Amino acid sequence: MLLSPKVVIVILNWNNAPDTIDCLNTVAQLDYPNYRALVVDNGSIDGSVAKIRTCHSDVEILETGQNLGYAEGNNVGMRHAIQAGADYIFVLNNDTLLAPTMLTELVHFAEARPNAGMVGPTMYCTEPADTLYAAGSFIDWTKGLTWNRGIYQPVAHYLNLKQPEQVDFITGCGVLVRRELIEVAGPLDSIYFLNFEDVEWCVRARRHGFEVWYVPQAIMWHKDSATFGQGSPAHIYYLTRNSLLFFWQNAPQSLRWVSVSRLILGTLRTVGTWSLKPQYRTDTFRRRRKANLLAIRDFFLGRFNEMGPDVATICYPNR
Image (tube, rainbow, N blue to C red; front, side, top):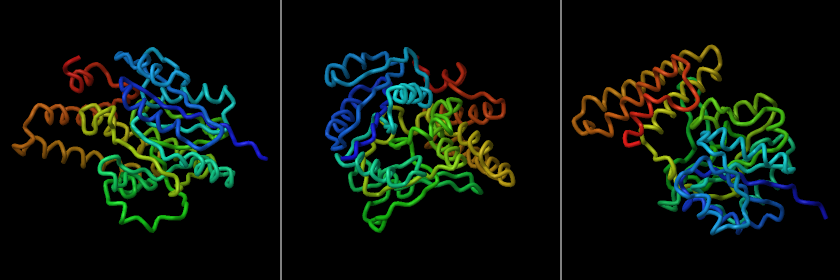
C-alpha cells in the first residue's frame, strides 16, 4: 500500500479565534489520512491563542509575537511545515470551512500531475450558500484586472465546470502547494503584506515551470474577508497599492504602463464619485477616499510592506 504524502495545513489567525475554531472543526473532519493542522497566530491581542487551545488542544500553534502581515505570517508556517517534512502545504484562510473530501481530492490530483505546483478547490460563499466565491481565478493584463470566476454568482450558472483546468491563479483562501515549488520559486512575497501576494505567487510559480490547476470536485466555503473587513479603508489601501505593484512588476513590458494607467484612472474615478455624490459624503467614505489616494502616493514613492503611520491614522482612527 502506497503511503499518503504528508500535508501540513497552515492557518493564519489574527484576533479572530471564533472563525479559526470553526475552521479547525471542519479540518478535523477531513478524510485524508496524513495531515496535521498548524495555526500561526499573527500577534493577536484578544486572547486568541488561549481560546483556540481550549477548543483544539491537539493543534500546534506558532506565535509570531507581532502582526507580520498575511504573506510573512503564512511564510512562518510554511517554513515550519517544510522543516517538519511536509510534502505539501495547504495554505488556508481561517474564515473558511472545508468539505471532508476536499484535501483528498486535491492531493490525489496533484500526485497524478508532477508539474502541478499549486492546486485549488471550488470556493463557495457561506451566505448565501448557493453562491460561488471562486471557480478558478484569472488575470487580464491589458485591463489591469484580476477576478475570481463566478464570484457572487449563483452556482447553477456554473454547473458545466466539471473538469480540472489550468488557471492563472488560485486565490489564497485555500491552495495546496507542492513543497518543491516553495524550494524552487520561493514563498509568498512579504513586500505585499496583504492582498495580491497570492496572485504574484502563482505567476512566479508558473514562470518557474509549475502548473496552477483548479479542481472543481474539491469543495470549500469562504466567509469573504470576515477577519479584515471587505471594503474597509485598510483593505482598500492594500488592494489599490498592491494591484499597482503587481501589474508594474509582472505585466508584459508592452502592457505595463497600459495596465497601471488604467488602474490609476479607475481609482481616481472612484475617488471622484465618492467626493461628488451626496450619499458618499460620510466619514467612512472620506477615509476610503484618502486610503485610495495614499495608496497611489505610496506606490510611486516605493513604500510597501506594512502601511505607514500616516496611513494607519486614516484606516484605524480609534487606535
